[in-house]
Amino acid sequence: MILHIDMDAFFASIEQRDNPGLKNRPVIVSGNSKRSVVSTASYEARAFGIRSAMPVFQAKQKCDHLVIVPGNMKKYQANSKKIMEIISHFSPVMEQVSIDEAYIDIKGCERLFGSSEDIARAIKKKIYARLSLSSSVGIAPIKFLAKIASDINKPDGVTIITKSRVKNFIFTLPIQKVPGIGKSAMKTMEILQIKTLGDINNYSLPILTRKFGKMGQRLLELSNGIDPSKVETNYKRKSISSETTLSKDIFDFENIKQVILDRSQNVGRDLRKKKLVCENVFIKLKFSDFSQITRSKKTDTPICSSSAIFNEALALYKKIRLKKKIRLVGVGVTALKDKNTPVQMQLIPDRNMCKKQWESVDLAVDSISEKFGSNIIKKASLNNLYNKRNPDAE
Image (cartoon, rainbow, N blue to C red; front, top):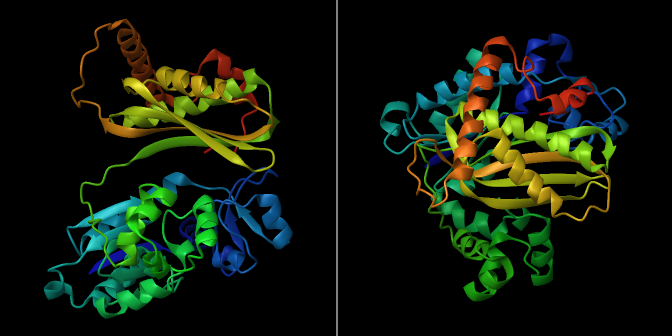
């Protein structure tokens, strides 16, 4: 059996724990400007229909006595580390997949800690005793069902899907509950009259592949209770990104260029700190009407310098025919590798030499910033941006 442990309203719960005056009140973690979005909502706030990623102004309309608390990522990361230490005590096969959730494979651990339900309740009890935070746990024979199960009885619940229940559970599972099913896929599901995961079996693999691409085969496997995904103890981060909601919608190229440079600096710094390089760069733009697009590009060689990331991101942006003002800009990287992974040498090394030189500069700046603060050295072209910087930047 596999367990998926998911903390309940993690950021908001920490703030309510640390400030007794916030208990039992509708709380969101976010910035307080009109353009901020909800990072996490307490369950009291969710009762009003408030959810993550909702604009704060909409959240305020739903609840006039809403409490807005600024986030404290260092505090959340410190709590996360303690939670993962507790979970890893129950099984060496653990995969942390975000700051507040993890999988464990408990095969062979029952002799030490009891049944899967006993282990789930012991984990919950230990986390609450040490950190005064509640969690929910899903238990299932396969990984993707464990994640779905953990969301069924939130908050503070335990849900078990035994082997004998898998077939019926899949047959009745709403298709929108399957991870990876977005708005575009849902439109196709409606056309095909697919309402549950079990309905996938009404179609052949060629049809599913034609309609959903690579996801078609996975959907067919999941609909038959097959999930080859394992709990990965050597799980590696698949992407690094940085985005910010702007203080006002912008259209001017130079302003957008500044924001892309600023975000690229953050991404590059994070890459180098983790001793990683990337082979793919992407940008994300959200427009004034809340529609959004992403564009990506494979790099010629693995990179980690902020300058190289910026150049790739800016090249992507220049190809977009802008018709609407922009409210959010994000830059990110994927296809991550260890910095010391061997790469094939290029016939013309000049560009790579330039990238190496900028990487050396970045490393020197990183070292100084680590010691004296992140804003002690900054590019002159970003001076105006830092002076009017949006406090909600992530």
